[in-house]
Length: 138
Ligand code: 5GP
Ligand code: ZN
Image 1: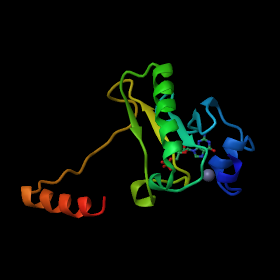
Image 2 (image 1 turned 90 degrees about the vertical axis):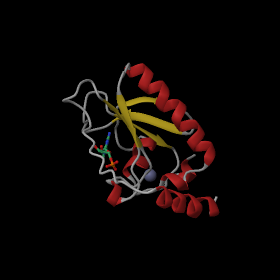
Image 3 (image 1 turned 180 degrees about the vertical axis):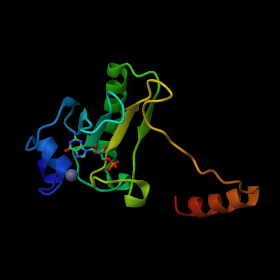
């Protein structure tokens, strides 16, 4: 496990116990702990015990372990409404460069994450063109 962690990453240090955290649960491949600056009560981070900046760099076996742990933690918190969020890259608001899923409780309209979606109107042709581009690379 430790061969997949780095020395200069804050979340790798948390996994190794070099920086304290409020750990909720862990498996041999994943670690869940409370966010130090919660957006709402119970804001949790679930991370792979594998250092990589981007979601698409995490091996399948680590990803397969991560979401069941996130589900277990969401159920244990008893969140009825919440966001499961994962940011990739600074333009997508990623600050810590170790892949992490946020579980953010939405206990009422006022508390929790406020998300504004800048949705665009597109044509069927534009959707088809996007589809062709992505399917070519699968
Ligand atoms: P990002 O913006 O990268 O998606 O979110 C990073 C999250 O990590 C933030 O919500 C921030 O509060 C949290 N965080 C940063 N450093 C620490 C830390 O040392 N301990 C804990 N528990 N959370 C941290
Ligand atoms: Zn790391």
